[in-house]
Amino acid sequence: QVRLEESGGGSVSAGGSLRLVCVPSGWPGDSTRMAWFRQVPGKNREGVASANHRGGYPYYADFAQGRFTISHDSATNTLSLQMNSLKPEDTAQYFCAAGFQGPADLALMDTAYRYWGQGTHVTVSV
Image (cartoon, rainbow, N blue to C red; front, top):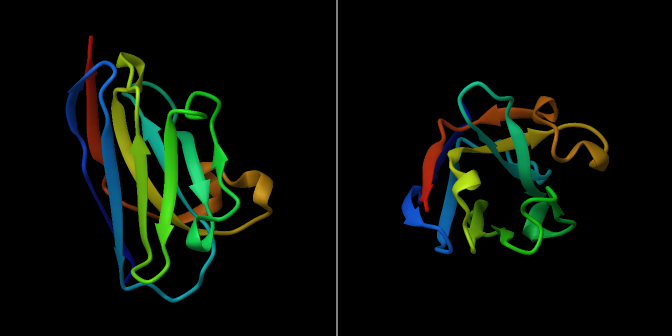
């Protein structure tokens, strides 16, 4: 059974930084892309960033471009998201996703991923 465990969320002031980490277990061994998504109550889950094995071919949502960096440690299959210059509107539950299936242009679509973590919450205050 594949499990994804996120950590690194917390509360920061606007302009601060956080680093989210996703550690998989029971991984079947494929090397397709992984991703980070986020969701706030009452809104749909939205893609933040995605990358394939070793962090290659990254895709970023417009709001993440230039502020967030996705990386992947191929030795441990650990996925990270470095978030800098955080804004109050970045407040959300952040989820790790894996098991991508589909063409690369679906990299930020939640329906393209089979496995999900429980999420870690990020709060950014003014």
